[in-house]
Image (cartoon, rainbow over all chains, first blue to last red; front, side):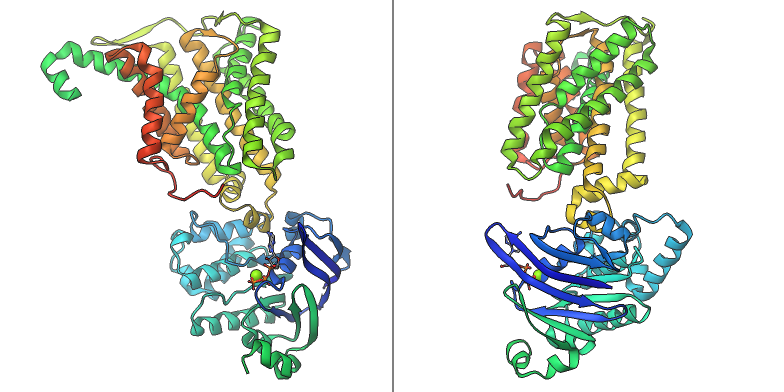
Length: 234
Length: 305
Ligand SMILES: Nc1ncnc2c1ncn2[C@@H]1O[C@H](COP(=O)(O)OP(=O)(O)OP(=O)(O)O)[C@@H](O)[C@H]1O
Ligand SMILES: [Mg+2]
C-alpha cells in the first residue's frame, strides 16, 4: 500500500531522517515509535507532502508520489491527522468536517459519512454548531480524526492521537483506531505511548535520532528487552 | 459633549450633524471597500500590501477610460474595473510576492512598497501627472430631507457597497472557495491536509480584494470627480488604518472600521478644520495601537514575527 525507500530529510543543516525505509501493507496497523525528536512527525509530514524530502522515494499503491503535491495526495486517498490536532478553531464542528470532504463532490454520501462520524463520536453529534476552538482536548482529537476520515482515506496517518489525553480517553481513542482499521482503512500510527501502540499494531518500527533501529510485529517488540527498557519503562 | 452641544444649538445644528453623517457614510463606504482588501490579504499571508491603494487608483483610471472613451455607463464601468483590478492583483501576487513566500516579512513588505511606487509611476508615465475629471455618469438629482441633502452619487456609493459586501459575505461563508480561504488563513498546513491548494486560494484572495479596491476607485471617481496617479496613497493609508481599527484579518471589522474612519474624517472637517482631518485619522491610529492593538474585532493573539 505504502512504501518508503531511503528517505532523507534535512532542516537546514539538521539531518532529521537518515535513510528511513518502511512498508505499510493493505489493511495493517503499523506503528512508528520513538523518543522526542526522533523524527516521527517529520516522517509523517514527508509522507503527506507537507515536508520536502532531500532524497528517497515515497510509493503509494505502486505510484511514485515523491513529487506530488500535498493536496493531490489527499485526492489519492492518503489522509493525515496532524500532531496537535490542528482543527480550525474559528469554525464549527460541521464546517471542520465539511472541509475534510473538500475534494469530494458526492453530496449525498458526504452527508451519510458525516452521520457515520457522529455515530463513531456521539459527543461531536451533540455539538454540531459548537466552535471547534472551544472543544476539550479529547473532543478536538475526535474532530481531527473525523475530519480526516471525511476524505474517505485508504490510508490514514495518525500523529500522537493520545497526546495530552486522560488514560480512559486514550483507551477509547485506541479502540476507535482499531475500529476504523476493521472497516478496511490502513493505518500508520505514530505514538510515544509505545505500550498502547504496540498492543494494537500488526507491525512496528522504532525510530531513533532519524534512523530505523528495529522492526518486528507488535508482539515481538513489546517483548523485546531493549524496548522494555527504553520505551515501556520496565 | 457633542449631543449636549447639538441640543443647545437646536435644529440647524442637528441637521448639520446628520449631513456630516451622510457624507461620512459615503466616504466611509469607499474606505471600507479598500480596507477589505488589506484585511483579507493580511489574514491569509500576513502581508500589509502597500500596493493595494494603487490598485484602487488603477481601478479609478480604468473606470475613467471606459466611461470617457467608450462611453459606458456606471455598472459596466464598475464591472470592467473590478475584473481588471482582480487580474492586476493576482499578477502582482504571482510576480512579486509568491517568489518571496518563504522570505522574511520585511523583505516582502519592502517589495510591496516597490510595487506601489512602480504602479504609481508607470501610470504617471502613461497618463501624465495631471488631475483628470470623471465624466458625469449619474443624474445630478439630489434628494432633500429637510435641510439634509443626499445626492445621487452618495446613493450609488452606499448601495454598491452594500451589494458588494453581501456578495462577499456569501462567498466567504457559504462557498467552497470561501471556506478554503478561511482554512488557509487559519492554518496553511492543515488546509493542505484537506486537499486545499494554498497557492490558488491566495491568488483568489488577491483577486477578490483587488476587485473591491477597483470598485472603490470607480466610486471615488464619481464622488469627488477627480483622479490622479497618486490618489491611492492617502486613501490607501486611511483604509489601512480602518482595517487596523476593525481588527486586521477581520472582514466585518474592515467594514466597521471603514465607516468609522469616514465618519471621523467628515466630522473633523465639519466641526473642526478640514486641514486636521488627515492628522486626526493618524492620531486615531496611534490611539488604537496604544489602547487596543488587536482592533475592535481582532483576535488577541501575540504575533510571532
Ligand atoms: N521546522 C523545523 N526546523 C528545524 N528543525 C526541525 C523542524 N521540525 C523538526 N525539526 C527537528 O527535527 C528533528 C525531528 O523532529 P520531529 O518533530 O520529527 O520529531 P518527533 O519524533 O515527532 O518528536 P516528538 O515526539 O517530540 O513529536 C528534531 O531534532 C527537531 O528539532
Ligand atoms: Mg512529533
